[in-house]
Image 1 (cartoon, one colour):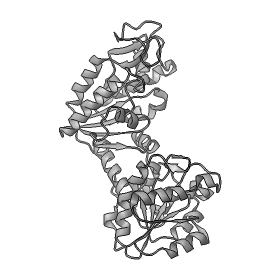
Image 2 (tube, rainbow, N blue to C red):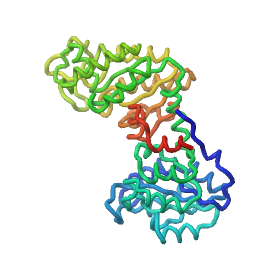
Image 3 (tube, rainbow, N blue to C red):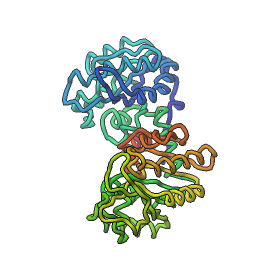
Length: 398
């Protein structure tokens, strides 16, 4: 990954205006923030810039509005951000135009303002140069601290980085360094755990990973498609039979690249998909027509754990089984705890993210024990697919 400048590289900021792209798109209920994770992620950057004497101008989208509407206003979020920051956050009722200019002018040095939802203007998602110019006119510098929005080439995520001196915020810097460490220039061997329901949603991820990792560990419903491609009868399991040729192609690419694909050889099966349903551990060649695979088996988990013990890096995306419903959470929990123990023992660098991964690792109780867990969702998946992220590419141009 090419270099990028961070806020440590910024010049003296006293009295300067800094536009900071954060991700304040937080879940709300009855006008209150119900999960402030993204607000807390913004604190390090916003506080550092304000403490350096800058006027900090926070930019973010919220929801999917079509023009201005009250329910997608950032006003209540700005109030919640103030509480998390422990300092006042002035709300400015627009992000461009006379209202924005007056609001910014009224802010004293060292203070924080939150501009209204950038998506209230069509120019945001269109990355309209005229809209970018209006945003840029408010600030002297631009900081992107929203990796979670970096896969979108929008005005506030990509356009501004090409108009103003641009820097990565603390959260962006941490994320980029973690991702570089596992798939950019990693210490080998590297393992990837890829789970989830469908191969169709992860074709690009799997195709990219087989050329970058030494061990590809496939679980979840998608493992059934790979097993079926190898001629295994998977009963009434979730399986994309129309993608068996795709699965075989991925395995062929892996073999050519020297990547070992790990598929389960024992599985947990049941006749019903519900909590507490009667289940059994079965060899993959012993699955009845009325049974479905809902988790990988204990012997397969032990084999994966043994492989992890030989690795230096792990990237994890997706659960190994139907982790929301006991007892089909056992494989995900067991392997996550092995990875966590290796991380805490300083023998394995672990990075996880995307989809249900965060919830699955929280269920396993290992959230604090991995090296890095990304909550970026779509951006994390596109990075795993090997796609350039416009917001990151723009930062690297400086």
